[in-house]
Length: 230
Image 1: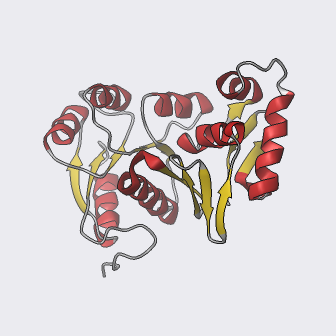
Image 2: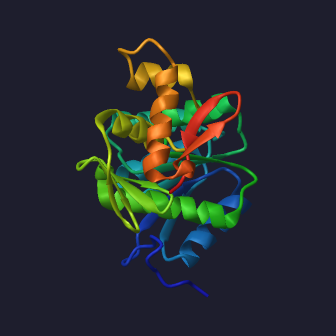
């Protein structure tokens, strides 16, 4: 039985999701899951069909496989982004290395999920992308909270938390690519370009954790940092 849309992010009115995957059984299963959650779903079995649908119909979320016939998933996404397609995209693929995830996110995807996957996690990620679509680029989800880009504050259940300029820049970068693990050197270059020492990254991670809790930024041992949750 279909679940009624609720405050977790499902639309008040049916939204449309495009699923592009050449695995027919998986594609049908995803479509049924999404339909049961209150979405309308279109399906495409190859890159060219996905490109045509994406450019001729209005969608709120796109679920995209990388290994597609006719047109590779990343090539498809790059073409869409060049043509102004700004719908949030979840890449769903068996390619799970860090390099693969980075390539997917750099191609323009908002999220990246590796097969096999948990159904509840998949639906939660679609809900998060749905919320991002509804709010545009002005708010980014961080666990159960939101980063308000315009006001440069984090909105939590207990109130708003103001951030300094560098705190905001660091959290904003992590929130825009929530599944990327950033090395300290990369964070220093992108957020603190005028600061020589990589220790500045650790300092501002400490500041964010002091304001928002230790889980807001996750440490990936031996690598660096990624977005956590509130």
